[in-house]
Image 1 (cartoon, one colour):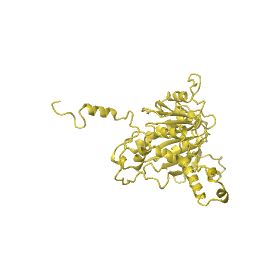
Image 2 (cartoon, rainbow, N blue to C red; image 1 turned 90 degrees about the vertical axis):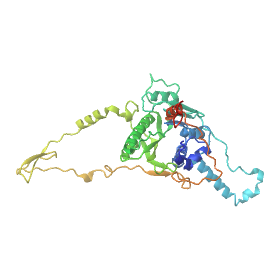
Image 3 (cartoon, rainbow, N blue to C red; image 1 turned 90 degrees about the horizontal axis):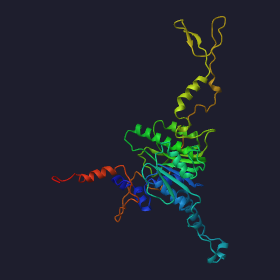
Image 4 (cartoon, helix red, strand yellow; image 1 turned 120 degrees about the horizontal axis):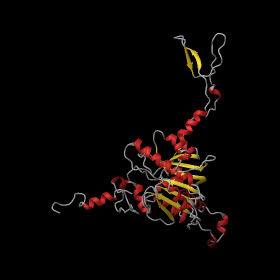
Length: 398
């Protein structure tokens, strides 16, 4: 959580500190859950690119502590409102009962889930969270898969087992993004490669029917990314939470119901099951294609005979060739139709606008971040500036 003037004007930045979240990005996951009910029947989760741990903090409070946020909290509020409205006009049976026998309005006790396993991975160190297993590793490196599988299953042996989880997880989330350079094409490309690394790691640990959520940068060729995700998941959505600034190109891809193709085996050494074998696969596919003999056609302008690639029948007695043209009307209508992922806006319309500035009350007190960065990238620069005497350097003669 930064301390720039833009961050201070952000309502979600202040709200995150007031509610005890490590970063404002926690509201993005909560608003995604409001729309897609991500935490339903979920007990095993992997959080990729987790630092500083705001999404892991949401998982800890929802799954381990049993607190209610997102859709569950919204459903509870609706149930309490309906129950309150029904009590305005009590029924005859309710009037006959004594007050001591009335049922409680709602049960606000925490309900932790059983057998919860949450693993968080990031290159930066993550401050400890209750019930969270943290790994400091690179999700793009093949050695990360055995570490993750070992954290999910202590009995995992990398020498005797493959890179498939014996105890797969229900949900894989990733809020990772590279340090933007301002060159949008470069940033989108680096983000897409980070997303593919997260997806390929998710394919190793995700169980059939699982869910995958990751940050994306919407660019010119983002449809290709949607199509690749559609191969592995039944439903793919593009979501934009209200807490995500409209001026940002970021969005979140939400993939529901993991359905791997038959015979597919994920591995970081062969991304998406293909890896370096793609050129050879294309060459084999071209070699297996049917070979059509060239057709001799006459150029009516010059009178010369040219070879054409179309397949033709033998010439008749007049030297005329009958060329068979493929009838496109017999092809399926949806063969060449491009699939477009649906775009969903998440978050209540009455919620704060992340791009708006709100007037603060006169008695407002600015709070410190819940968890300062453990090892920020600018830590070395701060140490060097302090060694040189601060922002303006050491005084002369010292």
